Amino acid sequence: MTIAMQVLEQSVVVFSQNYLPLCRVNIKRAIVLLVTNKAEPLDFATEGGWQVHSPSLVIDVPKHIRLKIGSNERTWKVPPVNRREVLRRDHHTCQYCGSSKRLTLDHVIPRSKGGLHTWDNVVTACERCNSRKGDRTLSETGMRLRKIPKAPIHPAIAFAEKFWTNVQANLE
Image (tube, rainbow, N blue to C red; front, side):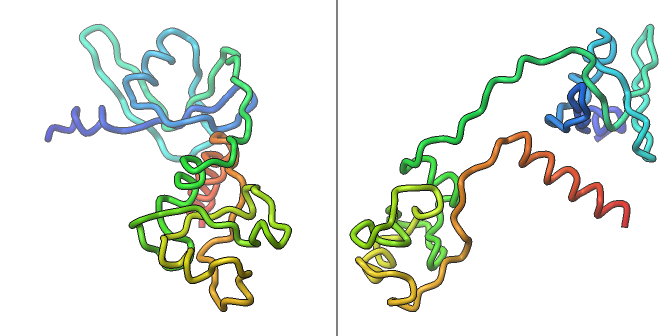
């Protein structure tokens, strides 16, 4: 693979006007945003970037760019608690044993004991674990959850948390 092809496979972090990390884009998209003056390079990162040559232009592409244009961000709502969304949140694995076969939904605190059908009370469980737990609480069965269930967060916030964690790790 040539160096040019390796450069074109790189990605650039895009920030909003108020410096919220939004997403990663491939270097081609970053060049379009820079050339059309819809984005500007950010210099806060000590790492450089890449120099891309065309027949008539040489452009420095940084690792981080900031949009100059305002984006009409869609309002994001917490998705409803349903089978598809719970399976997605739990990565299609049983939250008791880790199996990915014959999955069902389980109420951590059974509905018969006052448990609600909410993000923090519904988890993915395989048929075997769900039958074993039955209509009992975790303390009654001695079972443990692999992860504490919680509602999904806005994708931009999830990206920002991951991005800043990586930045802090690189600084240390």
